[in-house]
Each structure stands twice: as structure tokens, then as C-alpha cells.
Image (cartoon, rainbow, N blue to C red; front, top):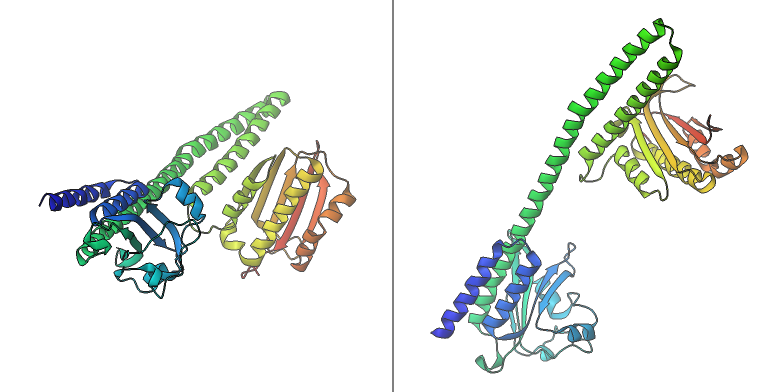
Length: 384
């Protein structure tokens, strides 16, 4: 009776831990409880990979660090473990060395003969399997019993609950992060951007009065401040978009441009967009635009050693040839500049992309230093 009570208490302790959000710690505790309850020396829990062909995760107990190092690599879901994946039903084997589906143990692996495996089910889907091996010889003659199988199934159900609980918590955290991003984006738009816009209007009005008073120096300074405010507003709007799409699956052209900017080493890159670029610039056209931006930025860093880059993609431009809608890419840098011939040879592929689309490209020095690249192509409804 005392032994039964002890086993029930151990099982209860394992169930109580299921509320813990550290799923790895919970699974490890469950394995230790399982090995203790059924008298097994080793325990493991294998997580089935998304393609269902092997194991993507393997939590184990019973082997010391030296044994783990000697084994070299964890199981991949073949042999008996693969049999459980293909047919997720409780499996008891008296001697693994004589089982037809066993593939043998790798060198350095501790000997294992008796085996008990049960599926771990999460929301009616098989998540993995719980494995127990090498039952102590003083317990039931070293053979796993039907009672052991029931205990293992109970703990496998607890493991499934722990995994589901952790997944729900992760989803809740993601939702909280997305809600925070959305709130910050709205605050930036409703408060910061509007106040900056109002400040710009006030300065413009003050500049008009100064023009009337014929104070060109102060008027010029105020005009410069207004221009800077406009740039800040554009940058904040780009940040707002980044907050709104961050964490979402995939991403349109704006998200991909922002990701590209973050990948550029040794330079500060600002990305601005105008118009509905995610709707108007898609498919192969979006691929071309990304290629243009990537090559232009790489060229500015590699040849001009530019510390700062400004990338502007405008989907509201006018095609200078047909007068229709066009997308324009403008990349400004403050580097040492490049010789016109060098720029052309390095960017010949981008000129060819523009030509194929009926557009064009131009590279020119910027006033005050640096280089400006302009690339444009007509917009098409298919963006092919």
C-alpha cells in the first residue's frame, strides 16, 4: 500500500507541474517521474518533426553527460522509434536486441533491452512519443507490465497538456506583442505625427510673414527646419508601417526593403516609400526593385564607402515616356562618389532590368558630395 501511495503522490506532483511555463523543465520532470514510477533506468520524449518522418526534438533522462557525449548524436526516429511514429500505439518489447524492427544502438550507447513506448497526443494530434527502457530486474522480472503502460499513458497525456499550455502561452505573448506594436503605431500616428505636422504648418506661416518683412536669412533657416520636419514625419511613417507588419507572415515590398536595409553592414540606411507599394509593386517587378536597391546600396558602400544611405521607392510617379504610372527608385549616398564609367559598368545589370521593362536608369553626383541613383519602370497591373 505504501508503494502505491508513493507512486500516486509522484504522479500527482507531475500533474501539478503542468502549469509551469518552462516546458523543457516540465517534460524533464515528467520523464523522471515516469522512470521512477515504472522502475525504468532511462526515459525520453521524442517530438515528431513537421514532415512526420523523424524527430525534431529529443528530451531524455538517465544518461550522464559522459554517456551522452559517447553516443555522439541523439536518435533520428528510425528502427523501433520509427515504428512508433508510423503506428502511434502503445508498444512493449521484452528484448530490443531481438526485435525485428530494431536497428541497433550506436557505439558508446548504454545497453537497453526492455522497452515501453506510448504516444503523446496534443489536441487529438500525435505530437511525439514517450519512451521508457531498461526496467530494473527487481521490478516485475525486468519486464514492463500493463500497469506500467497505463502509468506511461497518463504521464504522456500530462506531457501533451504541458505542450499545449506552452503553445497557448506563446500565442498569447505574440498577441500581446502585436497589440503593443499596434498601440505604439497608433500613438505615433495620432499624436507625434500630427503634432509635427502642425508645427510644420506654423513654421511655414511664420516663414511667409518673414518673407513679407524681408528677412531672408531667418526665413531660410525656418524653411530648412520645415524640410527637416517633413523628413522626420516620413521616417516615422515608415517606422509605423514596420511596427504594423513586424511579426506577420511573409511581408510585402516595404517589409522586404526594411529587412534589406538591416542587412547592410557598416552603414546607416533609411528607407522611405510613397504610395501603395505593397499593392502596386508585386511579383517580378518587386523582385527587380529589390535587386536595384540591393545593388545600388552595395555599390555605394563598396566603391564610395558611404556611411549613410537614403532609399526612396515611389509608386506614385509618372512615366516620363508614356505619362502613365511608374515606380521610381532613388538611392542617395554621402560617400566619396564614383566615376561615371565605374558606376555604369557596375550597374549594367540594373540598366538591363529597366530596359526590359521600358524604363531607364541614371547615376549622377549629388550636390555637396555623394551619388544619386535613379531607376524607374512603368507600373503594370500584373507586376510581371
